[in-house]
Each structure stands twice: as C-alpha cells, then as structure tokens.
Length: 608
Image (cartoon, rainbow, N blue to C red; front, side, top):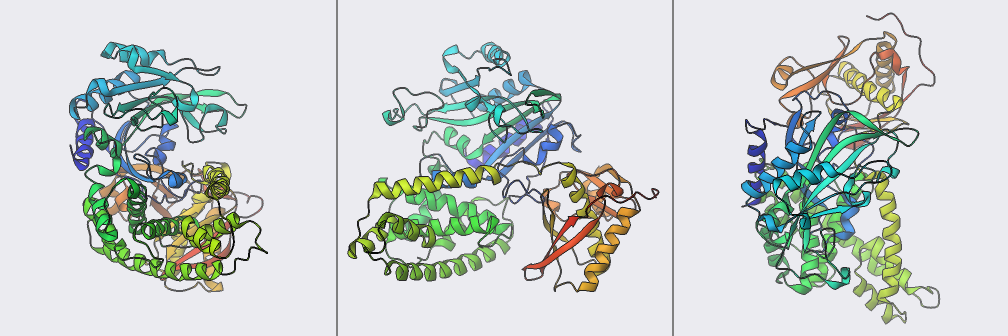
C-alpha cells in the first residue's frame, strides 16, 4: 500500500460510523504562540488543553495526520530509519474510550486494513515502578486478542512511559503523561547486528525492529510536591509514524526506499551522478531528509537566518550542501537542490496545492546556496591561517572550520596537513561528540514540544495579544493581520502585517487603547461555533487552514472576537496593564512588537 493510501485508509478507519472520530486539520509546522518549542514535534501538541480536561469543539474522538519536525534528531539522520521530518498519524479519546477499544481498533487497523502479518508484530508495555503499577490491563487485552506472550515485552519508564519531559521523575509540575503500549514491526529478513548487543529485541537499535505505533494512556498530572495525580478523565493519545508504517507495509527496512521518498533519492542520484549504494547512502539520506524538512519550512514562510526556525532551516540546507559536496566533489554549491525540492512537492499534492511554494523554494534555495558558496570561500581563507606553531590543536581548528563554515572533515584534514598539522578522525569525533552532547542538552529545553506554559503570567499575556491585535487594526487599519506570536513568562512577541514602522504617536495610541480595555474589566467569554458560521460573522481568523469544522471563539466584551485555543483570563482587569517596549521589522511588509505586563495590577473597574 502506498504512503498516501495509508494516510487515507487511517482517516476512513477512524471516521467510520463504528468509531465515529472527527477529523481535525494539522497544526502548522511552526506552532503559533508557543514559546516552548520552535516546531510542532508531536501530533498531540495542539491538544494539550483538551487532554487536561478542556472540551474540544469537535468532540471527544479526534483523528488527524500531523507533519512534525524534531531538530534534536539532526545528527541521527543517516541510518535506515531516522528522520527529522515525518508525519504522525494520531487518534485521541478525550475522556471517552480507553484501553480496550484503542488496542482492539489499532490491532484491527494494522492487521486487517494494512494486512501486516501478525507474526511480525511485537508489543511493549510498562513494567511498573513505585508510582504507577505494572500495565496488566493491556497485557490481558492482548492475550484475549490472541497475541502469544513471547511477543509481549515489558520495559521500564525509559521506554514505556510518555510525557514531553520524559520519565515521571523528570516531569515538571503541571506536565501530563502516562504509560504506553508500543507496536513494533520485525523485518525478519534482517539479521541482528552484534554491535548493538548480544541479543535483539523490539527496542534494539540495530534496525531489525521498527516502532510503528504508540498508544499513550494519558492518566496522570505531575503535582508540585512530586506526586502523580490522576487526571479527571482518562485519555488516549495514539501516534503512528506514517513513513514507518509505509516501510512496514511495503516490507522495506530502508525507510528512504518507500514510495514517497524513493523518488527524492532518485533526483539526488541525478544531481550527483552517483547511485544509492553503500558508500553514498548516508549522504543521500541526509540530503533527502533535510530537503524534505526545508521544503515544508519554506512553505510556512521560514527564511534562513541566524536564530530560531531560520537558523535550523539554514543548518539543514548547509548540511545538505556539504553532503552533496562529498558526493560530487568540489567546494562550490551544485545545481539540483531546487529540482530535489520540487520532487518533494510532487509527492505531497494535498499539502502543496499552489505553485507559490515552488517560487518560494526557488528563491530561497538559490539565494542561500549562493551565500553558502561565499561562506565556503571565507572558510578556505580561514584555513590558510593555520600555523602549527600557533594552533597547537589541529583537531579543534578542523572542528571550527566544520562548525563555522561547514567544511567536511576530509577537506579540513587535507588542507591542515598540507601546512604541517596532524588531524585525527578519532580526536575530531571526540570534540564533535562533546559539542553534540551540549547541543542535545540545549535542544531538550527548546525542542521538547508542547503547548505554551499556562502559568498565570503567560495566560495574561496571551489574552493581551487579542487586545493588541484588535488595537492595531483599530489604530492602523483593517489590513493588519496576525502573522504569529511567541509568549514567555517575561514578554509577548506579536508579528503582524504593516508596510512601515509605527510612529511614537501610533504606539502610544495602541498602548493606551489596550490599557483602556484592561481597566474597563471586560469579560472574556468562550463560545463554540461552526468554522463557516464564525468566519461569516466577521470573527478574526488568520490561520483558517488549521481550524477544524467547529472552533472555539473568545470574545472580549464587544471589543474583540477571535478564533483561538489558548489559555485566557476571565476578565481583562486580571491582566493589570501592558507596556509596548520595542518594535522591529521582520520582513518586507511585516512588523514585530514586544510588550510586557506592567508592574503591579490595576484596580478593576466595574464590568461592562
């Protein structure tokens, strides 16, 4: 079964009248208003408030397919099954069905809809600890279905517990999590690689087993004292990697050979005039993965830069360019990147429905590769500065060339050794591993995923963005539309369309209007309507493609009405006051405002 057919079959299975799930659209790859992460990395990311108990406008049973990106996996790409970009099939029960229905249904989908051989499927469960008992309930369900005990495996929390923070002891207060039941597909044609240990098992990294689905039973919320408190309602959060399901269904251990990625590999072969064979596989996999991710980022208006999402996009493009250099030889960027990205677009007709994306890709790839060529030239000049009498650590010098200019190790080694230095692959790797360890530690903090911190401060700031949005439109004009936001415990950041910098007088008017509405103590109320009805009534909505058929609308008195799913105060006086501290340009026709809460709180006026 082809990848796109698997996705459609999954939707049809869960929206069937016997299971009656409602399909919801995917969240943007760049999550709006979420400071905890640069990218959407999990299918459940947009659903955290609802998993905690807030009613979802589409009901208690939901299904979707979510494009995801995980920057912390960049260094892992190159084997047969790791990618930074992937699609996650998801189904959710928000306080409705639980283990019995979920496990029965997912088994039916895998074995009957996808026709996966039962003897190739293995199951893993939580073995229990001092806080949460062993998952015997799931074990009994699998036994009743007819799974032999030899294919049911128990693991500790490191493997069979899920929360965005990891194991229960690492969960911060307010984090939700629960035990998991994972399904693994065994590629029986593969032999176990002994370098991964004496025995092979579902969680072995040798590639013989691949995880294709994970049912998370969200039952607990971490308390301030460290205990786990049961949630008011038990939830199911299932995630299944679409590309991995395709690999299992097509019985190919190499995920880069499934039908939706193999054409991208073919285009890479054309570009470098080499075959997808042993020596070239790793580089080609990196190029395929990175350019798939880059194409989706560019489609969401990310541009290469030196910070946040733009930095990751630049890193992906330059790593892909280095790998292409290694394949083709030479130090100048090679043609072909644009055609490779075009092939990615062809494989996703439902995601890229207009020619606009191609134009964006062409422009950004051409500009970035030209810029990288100049960077490589600077790197060559930098390499000429090596002096063995001054630079006592040639390996560190080589790593700095790699880190700053993207120089491959073998090129740096050749250049440095021509000038009398000695470069060791093992010592270079040791420096590199130390760098990766620090990068991973940083990545865990910012790429862990999840909804914005719903503290009292961030809730106030989030509500303030609604007031800011409407005030901008009232003072500057209806051409203003939200282009994104980011909220931390220190400030709010709000991007919007506007052709020029705001004057001091305009900023004062906007800030004054916001604080007038705060002082007026306007009520903040939530209603649920159909998306079409809300849009016809004039409710503000600037991410239309990401909204389900039914939406949550937050009204602030009669001043503001906006589709939103974030946390809000109950009345504006709770915000206290807002001060605009900075404005800047983001791109042509796009501005950015930073604002903070004023110290102290304002005395509420009578509610209007």
